[in-house]
Image (cartoon, rainbow, N blue to C red; front, side, top):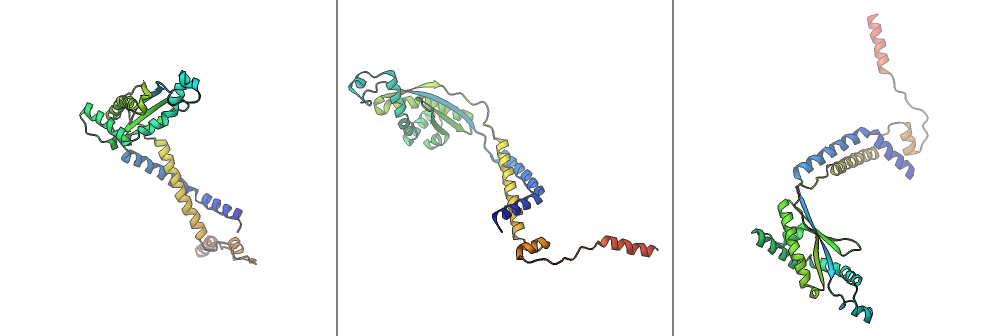
Length: 251
């Protein structure tokens, strides 16, 4: 059997059981919705955005004597952008996250660890700029907001203490407390559940058809054994026979 014949057989198996695929798609979508509603934890997000700027980049830019003596605003911005990846790595260290936890615990009287801070923040930079921002996501709106407020203090302080303070940071977009939880994204999860149901039912239909070794007609016999079929026994209409017997009795 060639590839085209196999593809046709798969499509035939799926089409014959389209009702099964539809039922499993509906069941998968319902299960995904129920699972999302019962087992998904609501999360709250706050964010804070910073601008990195260089105070004096002459020590790092050695292109020429003139550049070292007269650093322009453009060169300072380029230096800040060049060093931004380094500072982002610093913000991912346990030491930095511990300093954020210490600030949070000092202000709000809590007892959070550096691990809690590290697992809740995501750091990203804005491409082709010296801007970068933290996204804080937790299961508590107040906690997300308070961590962002602690970052407002710790980020500029850490940059001041790193690399001789050549690059500093200013808050360009202060944090705001989340007023609502993040969306559970029901449509996407229900779609995934439906696709999973279709895949499983389709796999069942195809395997059942391919593993079925029964001969269902002359076409199966000719295809599997490559022998000519001289004739076949027709199906008798038992219903008509019974009707004739009944008519004779009544007569």
